[in-house]
Length: 299
Image (cartoon, rainbow, N blue to C red):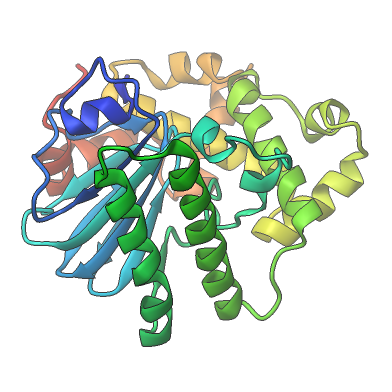
């Protein structure tokens, strides 16, 4: 339903296979991408000054001074009002981050990425800003050099992400267990592959070579929800997308998402959203947000 863009599209060079970019909001050109889109890469927005609204999978966030905003691959994203901002955007692929890394799980240990169950932003204190700003500047300086080094950029990115994680940990007195976090992110990858088959928790536990009980413990610690609730939420998110941007009926969507009984799908949808699929489709179609966000309609 939505176009997926790689980093080259955001510098208006679609054929450019670059895996890392850092751009200044005040000088960057507006990318020629559709308003609603998905990324194949990670993006970190540093809003030093100004205000913006970010739209991620049916959630709207108002972002202002001294804030970091995190976007992960495959999230449905819209970025509004970037013209008057001061700050930077950093875009990088998983492969770039893992360049020369011996610990291939390092990306999974960053709790602020790939996690739909935490706020996708971090309000920075004055001390946080003083610590992070020099790293942003070093990244910018290295990227602008004629002899720019991929290894140096990757090392600086690693430092930046580690410092951000430390800032995140300081806001949370009980940081996530790294083993649980890695396990949950592996589960999330599997869920994105199989959610439309409506598989039970035991299916994912078996894929991860663990008991359903243990997977539930992992999900509870990371999200506060049971595995079955996480699975259901992912299914309903896809149903919302299909109801908004296609002309599929509720029955067709139910079968597409692996529900054998459309009536059961409707009950689950209402439990999650407090609306029937039909009511949701009507409300989103008539809302101002729909007209504002969905420049391209899929009817």
